[in-house]
Amino acid sequence: MKRPKSEPIIEKRLPSEACLSPGEERLLPVAEEPLPGAEAGLSSGEERLLPVAEEPLPHYHKRAFAHNYRAPFIYHIILKKREGVTPFGAVRGDARIKPGEPGCAFVEETKLGKSIAKSILNLQVQFPILQIYQFMVMPDHVHILLRVREWSEKHLDYYIESLVSAAGNHYSAKAGTPIEGKDIFQPGYCDKPLLLQRSLDCLFRYIMENPHRLAMQRQFPQFFR
Image (cartoon, rainbow, N blue to C red):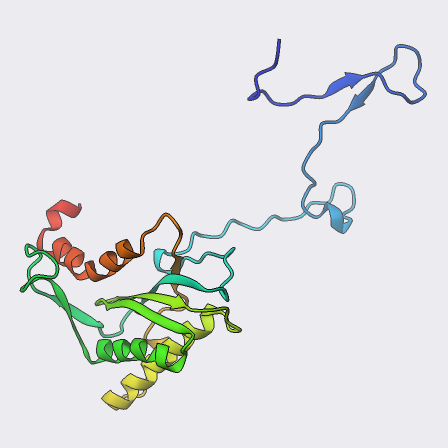
């Protein structure tokens, strides 16, 4: 009778080909994963402290670490506002009106929000290897649908850091208040490479309807508890 696959493997006793006495058996240990630090030559009985599991990354700072960020690809980028920084905009309009129709919800950008929007549009001018498909400046974060047209010598981080820096420079020039981009946005960003199962049209719609969803949450909070 076969043992169910879910049962743990136990030690087996088999006759050995070595010089054992008649009838004597040798215990064969079950294969185990090497202990951390074993390859480093720890002495017998010595222990190595294992690192504590890291906290999960915040929603706005998740990355696809196995992805090649120099490859031609389409990304959904999210940049989050720092605490204490003036909002990038304010939601106006009526959530009861269908997105795209007169009177629907939209974001009225502040001076800072306008500087960010201008910097996003300039990004593809500064770096022709990039193409901005869509973007939306929200009160406390920014969505960008960005395409890297061809293989790049630079990592995606380089272009996002350039955008952040440009936003700070643009706002400083317009407002007369010196500020660096790193003081506007939280460190890091979230990127979502466009996978085959995700439609580009769905991402367009998701980004464009962000103000509508936020307006819904504010006008009808009882539905989001």
